[in-house]
Amino acid sequence: MTNRKCLKIRAVRSEQGEGIGVYAFFIYGADINRIADISRIRRDDNELKGFQRREIRDHVKDITAFLDSGPVLFPNAIILALSPEVEFSKSRGRTPGGASEVGETGTLSIPIYPEGRRAAWIVDGQQRSLALGAARNSAIAVPVVGFVSDALTTQREQFILVNKVKPLPTALINELLPEVSVLLPRDLAAKQLPSALCAALNADPNSPFHGLIKRESDRTGIVTDTALIEVMKVSLKTAAGALGQFKQSGSGNDTAAMYDALLLYWRAVRDTFPEGWGKQPTESRLMHSAGIRAMGALMDPLMLRADSAPDKAAAVRTMLARLAPHCRWTKGAWEGLGLEWNEIQSTSQHITKLTDHLFHLERDLARASK
Image 1 (spheres, rainbow, N blue to C red):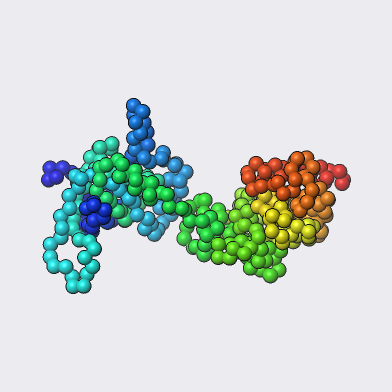
Image 2: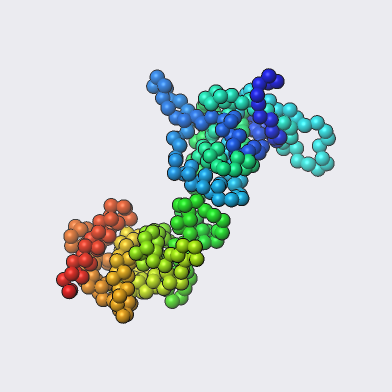
């Protein structure tokens, strides 16, 4: 390898399986795409090649934005399959007394070839590696674990094993988000404030949701936090939303006003439908994800219309009272939907149908009352 251009890095070598060399090392993020190819899945002459999915552009953009946000902690390891062409030179000198003999330190030399003929392939971390290559800071130290194999079957096997691990439960992420202060990717940042409001609604004895929200740390609740968080996310997206109107650029959000709006609206919902509130979703579709999402969607137009009323709470209760005789949360069939109360499911189709039905019904009743 003396006449070839190569990247030399300090590494620790060990073995797994039947004498397969495994290396752990750090390299700059920008160097990953100098030594490794992405083996994208394709077919040549009806033969399956590669194993990686296509680049997910939005995901890559989110990671790049995070990397460009300033000094960041990014300890997520990239996993590479390394060609047998790599060379390892063990460090000389005595082993420190009492040191573990699991691995040996030395210098790993990886040849640098043109794209498509590189001496390493990305088994896990395709999006991360692309984001690291696009980041403004090219000197982010990235942990890498590499195993020596040029057999595609071994690479695919490791790819499947690495990616079959279940992702963190959504409920766990939702509950952890309010405790995180670091700058988050867009998809998680959008959930952070709703998740904090959700936690407050569950903990506050004066909240209609007190003790009713199912969280990862306490599964005894009735209402899934995901349903409420989605309702709040939608309301926060627009300045005309019941919550979005209290978003302020630069000076921070008026979270107290947001929380008060949530209390006002959901107390009115609870008091309008006492027969359906606080029951298991199997007994009341009001507490079901579909019911929470549909009634949550009504919050923005009803709260907006009540803004001009001298008593906002009374105005919201009046509007909900008009709607109540037409709702079937615990028994009967929804007129106009063709569904029994307990046939409503947490599918996007049912949530959309129920939401649209309530919107049109409430609008028609409001017009008729004038």
